[in-house]
Image (cartoon, rainbow, N blue to C red; front, side):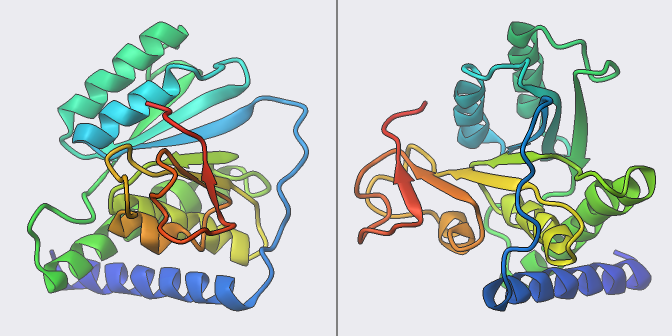
Length: 227
């Protein structure tokens, strides 16, 4: 990564850390608006099993109430692209160039087995790309509206970056994106690392096993098997 891009990425990471810190000491900011029109839905596809579970979650989606849709995926993740095509085919979407849904590729925040320092740089680069695509560009095009109204996540690491971006807008008092995190079906007795990191910052945190969160937590909702 060129030095200037590395500096910009690290600055973006510090900005996200500041936003999340402010979240801990300030009110939530703008309340979610009451809706009379369809909600713009952002969906993160985490590749592999995460994408498979998200595909199952979206099979029950009411496309008329959640449109347009934006699918965020890791650059080069062909499986997620195929999953989008199948989901949208079932929903009757018009395609990435139509008005129903669009695709957003982001650099991966962390590769399997990646070291901590390298992960920090990768996550910073991902955050910089996410800020540009989901914050700065929409801020110029339609500043009074959020990038998406609802953000649906089920991990892994890049989900943390997307939540940070949503909170930057929220803490600045611009717009409110409702954040929903669904813990993986594979997490039976404990939360994933992403889940542990995001639990304090999402609006709705859902687990699929009654003991997944460990001790009872009012911030966690048990919904049974969803996938």
